[in-house]
Amino acid sequence: MKLPAVNETSSTRNIQINGGGPGVAGTFTVTEAGPTLRRIFGSEYNLVGFDPRGVGESGPSINCFKPGDEEGKKWEAEYTRNVDPKNQHSVANFYEMANAYGKWCADVHRSGDGRYANTVAVAGDMKNFAERDNEAKGLSAEDAKVWYFGG
Image (cartoon, rainbow, N blue to C red; front, side):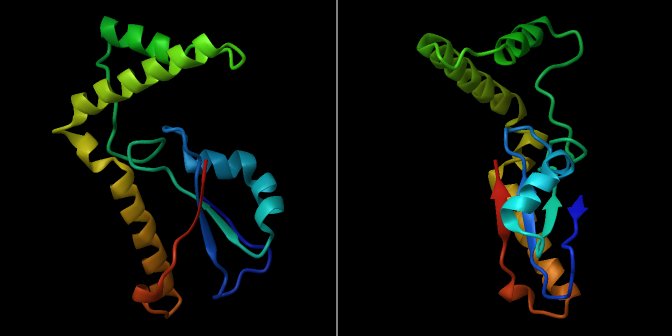
């Protein structure tokens, strides 16, 4: 998802946007926060939102639970509950549960598609995008730079 610069030229830089999370689609971030990001970075940059592997419209599909999985429903309910940021116990408990959930989910996918949906793979995708963009502009892929903003 691209929010183009106001006066886009062949030298316009792309800032790749990752909403963070994990699990937040960068395309959603650009769609929803584009005007705010535009005020922060200025109108001379293209803002390019992307869905990291396994997030939003990007594959592979990463789901830690099978439909009807009662254990999964328990984990999901605990992981997605509200946290009282003013209550130290609430924050600590949420952090502990999120950490356990993440480890459990990683183990579920360790030998499957999950090994292709990780930080290293996403960083490689971002580098590849910058290199292909340089080539499309007649520049050297080796000189490509990744401009990135993540949440």
